[in-house]
Amino acid sequence: MAASSLHRRFLHASSVLLLLLLLLSLSPQPSIAQQPSFRPKSLILSVTKDPATRQYTTTLLHRTPPVPLTLLLHLGGDSLWVNCDQPYLSSTYRPARCRSALCSLAASTACGDCFSTPRPTPGCNNNTCGIFPYNPITSTSTSGELATDVISLNSTDGSNPGRSVSVPRFLFACAPSFLTRGLTPPSAGVAGLGRTRIALPSQFAAAFSFPRKFAVCLGSSNGVVFFGNGPYNFLPNVQYTSQSLTYTRLLINPVSTAGSSTAGEPSSEYFIPVTGINVGGKPVPNLNSTLLSIDAATGRGGTKISTVDPYTVLESSIYAAVANAFVAAAGNVTRASAVAPFGFCFRTKGLTVTRLGYGVPTVELVMENGRVGLSLFGANTMVQVSDDVACLGFVDGGSSPRTAIVVGGYQLENNLVEFDLAGSRVGFSGLLFGRQTTCANFNFTTSTTAA
Image 1 (cartoon, helix red, strand yellow):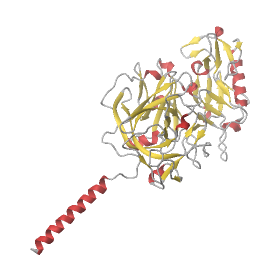
Image 2 (image 1 turned 180 degrees about the vertical axis):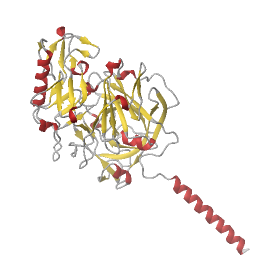
Image 3 (image 1 turned 90 degrees about the vertical axis):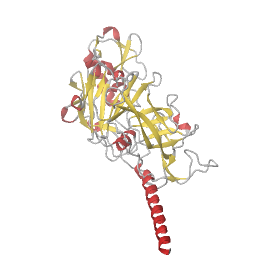
Image 4 (image 1 turned 120 degrees about the horizontal axis):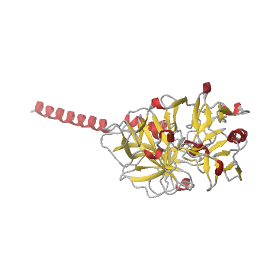
């Protein structure tokens, strides 16, 4: 009898132990995403340009139940951040605890408590990891709470949207509502595409085990962002692959921009090694070469690519040299009065119209070894400001800007730009007009379940 009782106790204890092991195996681990059963090769987000603010926005689903969020697309942004002051209802919201693995992933050492509300709420919990979301439009930063929640978006085969996929524990920053000032309504925050481990490209790559690579194709009204490998296909039957692109290496700026959430870390922005500028096929003389290099101590100088600057911004001496070379190469074109923010404008009556825009001198950014990395034709250099006036679409950035050359959104439009983080390189397609397509020609209207 005693042996039978002992046997039953042994079986009971074994059952309890097995149950505990099962529960431990099912508990969430400190990673940015749970591996899904379906792993797409690439993902897509649509892009919309607001004509009034010239901001590029995208939309994704967030929370449980899902809520569509409009977000500013920020190429150099550290992370995803959203306004949590508005009613935030989600059964899957989880704050990241102080000194946790998730906090380390965000390169944050900040910890904090929140006493402004009588009970925990999204964005206001005790013993949580702090982060500093940044609004690049107003150059404003503030403290926020690092957290995880579900986000969803579409997969793709490169040609069409595929089935929707979700990342259950996507890291983001909860920010107060005032940080959304200056964003195009109804934007609820910023989608950061920067080089950090918690920006969208790295988190998607980790969640779905595809390369840390993404491509941006901005349009004058609509465009697309691809995450993962190509191909990148546009109507009518135009395909871009890695073999179609001209690559240059990415540079790391060792100093973060003021207001960045990754203080003390290298910049999350994308810098390229521009060594000179050609206008009309000839080098622009008297460029200050020291400005073209990044100062290792201060992070000043160099050239970066931006989706939040609407036009390319040049340090004053570079601006003057480029603009004067452009006017000289343009020949007998009638000047017009300047129209802010542009300093050089022209009467369009004397300009020819080509498939690549106005027939004006090409502006080329020359990379290392004398190779041309990005060629800008009339469609990307001339901005129509009235029926009969177009202006050179570059802006004078003053005599002491932090970055000497900022390649802005207008100059990127209808160019596919691939950012290969693993390979530390960036690839340019050239103006899509040359192949009779545009960035708006990704086929969002037809979906497939195979992607």
